Image (cartoon, rainbow, N blue to C red):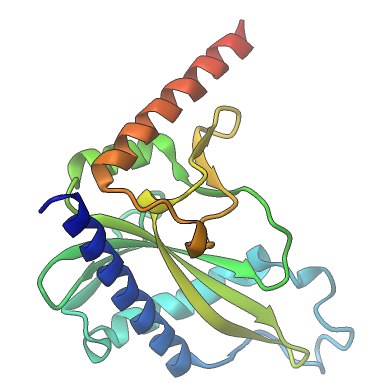
Length: 214
């Protein structure tokens, strides 16, 4: 495929995955965490994504596996490692594979540069899977007064389309982005184009780290 065909295929795949994950959100519904009887003063400091994310992530994970075929996927396989760059391997109806990293974002939260994945892990992934797409599936969550987590919607973004590619040299060499959820800002690249940018940013980060260590 030429460049335009690759971009079009990625866009179609992205839309399919996003649509199906949002269908899954409808199946899951609100996720009960506590109740006003045992937490009479509400969420307080617990109203943070990282506080409840492990539970929510497990709910999403189990339902993805349970409803894979119902949603139109051939298969959905959880990653063997918890420290890799993706959480799931999706096998699509046309037998193609894509990889998905799931994250959460609290509705109304501040705009921050979030960690996406370790730069070295991403370089290894794209080296080994040059034809497969890696996506970030960001679940927008809300904390309801009745102590439930509401999954409002999911935004699926190709990692290769992240507009603000930055490797933080002082944070374990993580790829960070503040705009990965903003699809209107996406830079539509091929994996090969992104891989070149990623390698360049890794080199810049490593150079900064060396200079700081002197």
